[in-house]
Amino acid sequence: MKLKTGIYGATAMCALALAGSLSGCAPAVLGGVAMSTLVATDRRTSGTQLEDEGIELRSFGRIRSSIGDRANITVTSYNRQVLLTGQIPNAQDKPLVHKIVSGVDNVRAIVNELEVQPNATLTQRSTDALTRGLVKASMIDAKDVFANSFKVVVERGTVYLMGRVTQREADRATEIARGTRGVEKVVRVLEIISEEELKRSMPAPTS
Image (cartoon, rainbow, N blue to C red):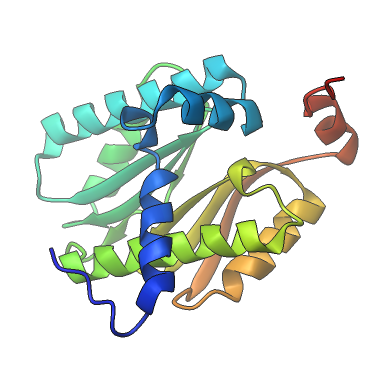
C-alpha cells in the first residue's frame, strides 16, 4: 500500500505512525521499555490489561470460526467492557456476534455498534487509521488530558472513546476529537470516575 503524502504531508505520516504505535495490537511489537511506560500510565491494573488482550484475541477467534471472513469486525476491550465495531452482511449476525462475545470469559459488558452494510474498503480503513492518529496526536498536543488514558477506535469517521476518566477529562477529550479533521461523530464508551478516584489511582511521586 502506497501512502499519499501530498495532501496531508508530514503531519499525516506522523499521525499514521502514532496510530500504529498506540493501537490495540501494539503489545505484539513494542519493546520492553515502551511497554513498561504504557503499563505505568494506564489506569487499568496490569492484570486487567492482560485480561483485555485475552478477551480481544478469544473473541476475534470465536467470531472468525463462526462467521468466517464475510464480515469486518473489530473487537476492543477496555476494563473488560467490549466495544464491537465494523460491518456485517445481515441483521442476524449482530445478535449472533453479541452472543459469541458474551460467552468469552471475563467480559462484563458489551457495546454493540456493528452496522449492516458492505465491508469498509482499504481506502476507508486507511483514512480511519489516519484520523485515529490525528485524534491521539491532538490529545498529546493539548497537554491537559492524559492521552494514554483513552483508547481511541475509529470506524468510517465515527470516533469511539474508551477509558476510565473523570467527567472533566471526558468532556475535554470529546472536544478535542470533535475538532479533529476527518471526525464526523464522537461516541463515548467511557467509565466515569470522580476526581478523588483519579487522585488515588495516580502513582505516588518518587523522591
